[in-house]
Amino acid sequence: MIAYLKGTVLESSPLELILDVQGVGYSIQIPITTAEKIPPIGQACELHIHSVYREDSASLYGFISKNDKEFFRLIIEKVSGIGPRIALSILSKMSVEILQNAIFNQDTTLLAQCPGIGKKTAERLVIELKDKVSAHSQASTTGITTDNANTNFQNSKYQDAVSSLITLGYKLPEADKRVSKALQNLGTNVPTELIIKEALGS
Image (cartoon, rainbow, N blue to C red):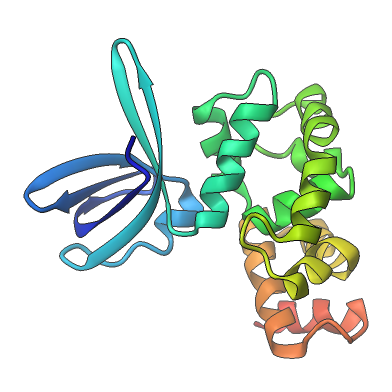
């Protein structure tokens, strides 16, 4: 079972990476949120891998963050009707942080924006994962620190700001990036209005 690979980037696209590991080229499926962080061709790259082996195929799914990999695994193992391809599509649409936040806050409207996810599947995500997301946020078992858990789960400013940017016409990934950057600049002890203003100006 392959769980981790380190090598040189041979080819890269939004959903696939070919990694040269000591002369062997591994084809790895990746979400867009990971593709955005992949180094240029010819440079070294490390990926956390989830392997899926079937009788007629073997697939590798790669993530820059171990937290992303563990949440990907949680989705496909705990939510009925969601396999690796749909889970990859979900993680291509939004970051793990905003996904976990939406599940914790039972925001099925936001979750239903993911490709392949309708209202009923969004509701299943919430039902199956809400307690697990809460447990992860408190125990940091997926690599989230206590400070990040407080930001993403106990503080609604993050999601309120993201939702506001989406209302203004921003796509979810862009809204997520802008709000995350604004929170890094300002911290969380500021009004939501200031976070939105900072996000709009970034």
